[in-house]
Figure 1 (cartoon, rainbow, N blue to C red):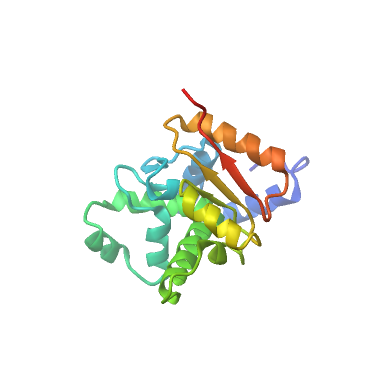
Figure 2 (tube, one colour):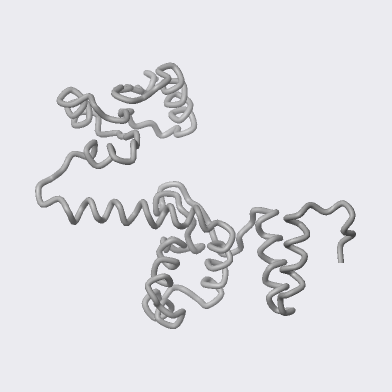
Length: 199
């Protein structure tokens, strides 16, 4: 037991909940807490350009959010392992621990992907990405300069568009994008052009 004289209410509540857990549950909780504090997730990685940079099972392109969504839909671990043959049971343990700590992030990834799929399925005629981004007030960042400059000229009522030229030095490119956005302030209705400097 922790000394109770200097404990905050949330810490006292945690202590009470911890006391109610079985030994196995306490070990799992301790493992999750240690991983959260260290921000190290064995078996989980984020790689820019892979699955939108979301958390994936190491060595695969399988996002944690995908596995969690299937679990929400009622899939068993056996079904997941059968349908994702590169996964091992230990991968699912790591995924569930990650979901337990980063639930909001995983739910946001699920929501974003389902919104994109809904948009794709619900548009028999091609809808402008600007129309899709309006309700959520999302700014569009793109390398597709020609089409998005045209879309801005046709309808400047959008949350903002940032068009860039390709640059292999993504750190330098990110800094240029940040400077350009900071200079403009509010992005709504603006088209921001970020060019790669001449060599």
